[in-house]
Length: 283
Image (cartoon, rainbow, N blue to C red; front, side):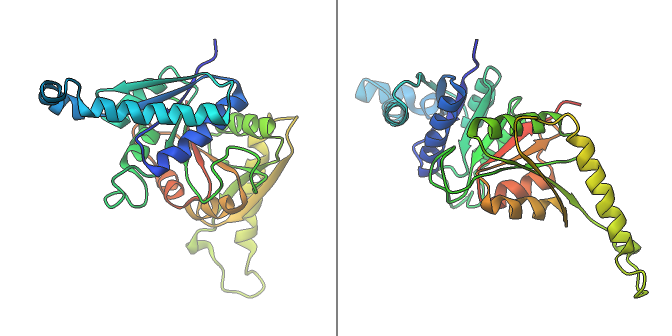
């Protein structure tokens, strides 16, 4: 049994990009695609509209949006199995629930309330923090494709615990036939800098060597069928990883705490130049 991919739909331009990306990803993995529209409008206004119109206007609107999104996905991949679901609940809760029986959730980076959430939509942020399965936030100015674009590598951020993160990143690289860039950020604490000209740089070298060793350890059981580049980069991960996303088709990072995005994930989701996968990590 293949778990479906779930994509959040709300009619915004951002969600349409997510639909395109999700259709490509579902076709690539050969799994069904479930489109979810979560709305509370019917709960508040449904009865009155039902009397006046014979049918809640939000039902028609949501149904029309879902139908158009499904048609868009099928035009992109005619053999793709697409189903739709309108849920009378907040969008983020509807998506998190749907993700319990899914392999991945895909959302746009912004919702319809662009003024309030001009950097990252609150739905995207909440789903990324609460989901039990990986979440893709479709960001960047790339063409709306999961593969075959201008960027030919996948970047994975390697932290303290990264087995599940590396596994997903490796799978995506393998399916796309692109190399994987494993990035480990490192920093030399300010109190260990040295003023003597003959010793300048020595503490930094030690921290870089430690980072390289930790990266090698993390990759010991890495993929044998994917080309893996190793990169140790000085600086905070919340700056290093968004910079690495500039020439990537996908950036994969982990999330260690359920219900909360750490500083790195928060920064990456706001600043990445490509779609980001947040992978919940199990201790």
